[in-house]
Length: 178
Image (spheres, rainbow, N blue to C red):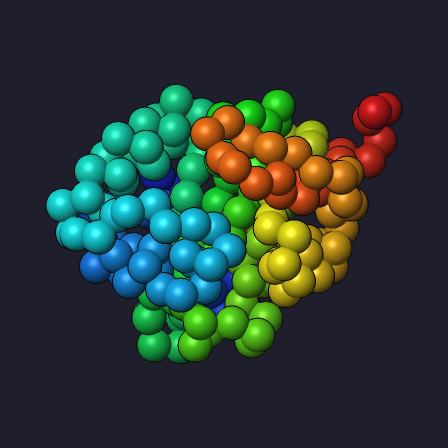
């Protein structure tokens, strides 16, 4: 993995995801809330997690300079979630996404990490607009997106999916015209 920048907030470290995070992602991608709200991606082994990091996450980072961050709590250096910027098929723009292990939800970590990733998008990568998607029944995610300033734009169906999801957008550079 090349030289990727690490970012910090008051309570968190946002480190670009790498192969050293495979155990954590095996747990995160198979926890009940991930499966309910994001979907079962059938990544059930360390080998499959490693393959996903090497074939999806790392190539996007190499191509665009950004991708997924592993969120680490400074207090104890525990990996607690993920947050990042994604080039998602079916979206005409950059997607911000986040997911945390259930025991670390409702503690402000997702807001803190997402807020930092939004500033990284604007200040480090010059991104003017972000999008986000969430399921219609994920009210916590919807509330967080709205707290971050994203506005609901209706629904969208992504390629190879069988359900519509809610689409949110926000302009990061308010001085530019829409």
